[in-house]
Image 1 (cartoon, rainbow, N blue to C red):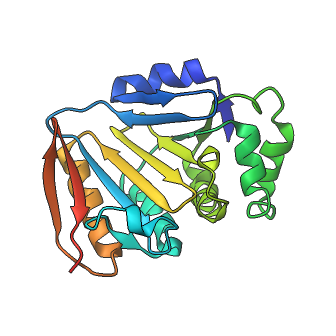
Image 2: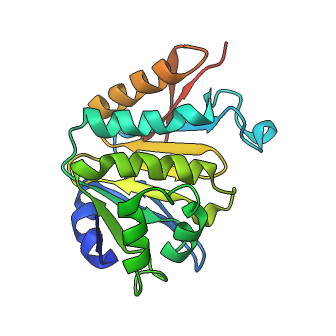
Amino acid sequence: MEFVQFDEAWRVLRPVGVEVVSHTANELRLSLTENPQSSCFDIASSDHPAQARLPNDMPRIARGTLPTIVEAIVHKLHLTAAYVIPVGHWRQLFDGVAQGMASNEKWRATDSEATVELNTRDALKFQPAEFHILRDLVKCVLAADDSATHGIAIATTGSPILIEVMPAGEIAIYTGRSDLAALVRDLVAHASAAKAPVTESAEGSSARVSTKAK
C-alpha cells in the first residue's frame, strides 16, 4: 500500500468518470459522471439505524455480507489497483478502524508511517496482493461508529466503477457501463436475503437500480 497525492490520483481517476458531488471541510463525497449507460446501486444493512427513512425498495442485506459484495466486484473485475479516498480525513479514518485493524501488521505500519497524510484526503493505493486488506478495511468501516467521516470511496483506473462505503451500513455502487451494471446487479441479487428480481428506474441520464422486496 502506498499513499498517492490527491491531485496525482485525480489525474488518473477523472478520465474514468470519477467526480466530486460535494466537498466541505468535513466531508468529500464522490460519484461517477452520468451517461446513458450509468447506474447506481444503493444497498443498506438490515440493521441500518435509520431503517424507517430508507426507501422501501432499497435492498436490505446483512451487515456482515456487505463486504463480500465489494470483494466479489474487485475479484471479478481483475483490478490491477484500487484507490481508497476517505470521506473525512485519514486521521479520522485511522482512528475509526484502529481497533478492528489492530491485528493487521501492514495496516498498522501504514498507520504509524502516515504523518503528513493524516490531515489530507490523499488516496491510498492497493495492489492485488493487498486486496484482502481492503476487504478487512471495508468490514471495519462498516463496524465503526456511524460518523460519515469514517466512510471511504473505492475507485479504480481499470473500469468506470466507484464504491462508497458508509459506517451507518450503506454501500453505493456507481457503474459507468451496462456490463458493469449487469455484474453488480447479479451480485446484489445473489446477496439479497429476499433473492428478489432487480428492477431499474430512470433517473436523469442514469438508472437507479434497486431490488424490490417481496
